[in-house]
Length: 256
Image (cartoon, helix red, strand yellow):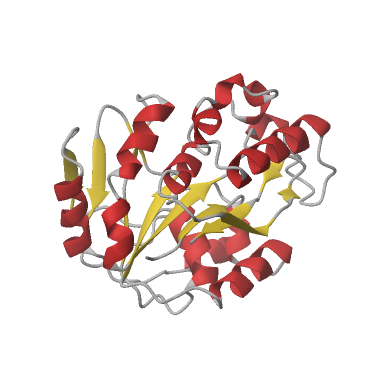
């Protein structure tokens, strides 16, 4: 089976920076098998009352962020698409029916991470959207139906952030001190992941500091896609733990 990853992707500037986080991605990549295709569940492809899978032959690089460093706009992640595997997702997930989008490109939740994991961009990549109109259990259950892909050479990557509240970060200092509430929530989630307490992770709104750590579900939900694919006897291995801009959790782990 292909391993499953969860990556805390953070600021788009990580695409062009060399820091502890990007170094950890480079090091983790050295131990990864080469997949036939990569499916990314990104916090930056959101849909409503609809689930779509991307099936472009040559997905474009999407610059879906603010006016940060101009070098970001010069990056092209030119990986091929994976239309065959996208059609397979539509076969596996029938309720709700998955819409196949043959034009969608790769958003920064995908390519800023893949630049460090698979820099040669020669592995087919596709994405599935997150229907934000649905509750957390919906996403966990949907992801379970993707399990056969792991045995078919597809590496599944959840790309979000466990703690992500843009109103409570320090935009000016990537190394700003982390507040206690953010660190406490991140540690709680770490413990739940390590002990495979999936129900508690699905019901994250009951956890202490959840309101501050997860004010919107978009960056947390990719975590549920990753843990739902865990099989008996598999354990999570964290390959990066840390924060950027005070309160963005960059925690990353691998299962399998």
